[in-house]
Image 1 (cartoon, rainbow, N blue to C red):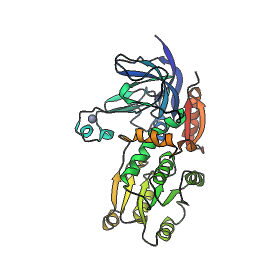
Image 2 (cartoon, rainbow, N blue to C red):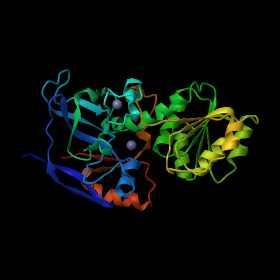
Image 3 (cartoon, rainbow, N blue to C red):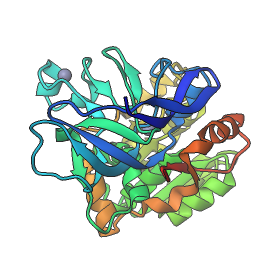
Image 4 (cartoon, rainbow, N blue to C red):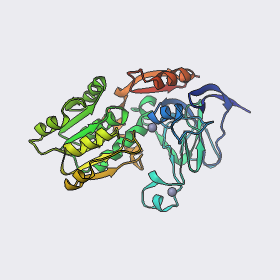
Length: 347
Ligand SMILES: [Zn+2]
Ligand SMILES: [Zn+2]
């Protein structure tokens, strides 16, 4: 049996670069030779052992791109060597959610590189990964492998931005300048927002937010309420994009949003929080949860391709896959200024 190198997650803080059987594409499937895979915050929480969506043994990696290495039976319209991105949400197509364009919350779905109720599906932190042919997205020449790997997180920010509705000429606040928040800043800019206020506790990340299109940045230690009221003639921001999801950001969001404004909830760092419910209701705040993506990955690749959103700015490091165990250990230590780390396949 042919083998390949992979980063296998064996349990909390136990990630090994080792030989595993090389997967074979079944009918209607494609074998992709990984070229770039990005480390997600959810992979890191999995590594630390605190994520039920990462059950060992598992090959993680759901933000990736590569080249087609082999075609399973019945696959047409693509060929070996094609440069591709991959939609990692493998939904069932038949449940009520899937039939209502909510395949992002399908209970029967697999997600490449994760463990769902349906089971585990090995991901792209390996030389090769198998995906259904219908999930393959051809890459235009303008899109690099590194950029294509970021189409997945970008699609999450794109979906949240869509929930905000028409933001043209409006003032939005983005909490959390990690990858999703930074990409949300770029999406809001692309959607025509006039003022984009990025809020985070780390100044270095705020500087990155400025590069991604934030018109204003403010450290959460400062008076965010006063700052946003002054910016909006005392009215409040039209929309809050919360990419953090902790008690202080949600409650500050309720404070700074205008009456009748929207809070888009994407971040979920805390599973359970106390919110100023009465205050939120009396302001008619509209809370909108936004989870993963449905059709947004295609749109993400399009805006990368036209240059409307420059995702590569947030890539701060790139290492070969073989260094994965050391890189995960370092990132899990928390003592890092990295924003997005890419692992590449140089074998
Ligand atoms: Zn992710
Ligand atoms: Zn379904």
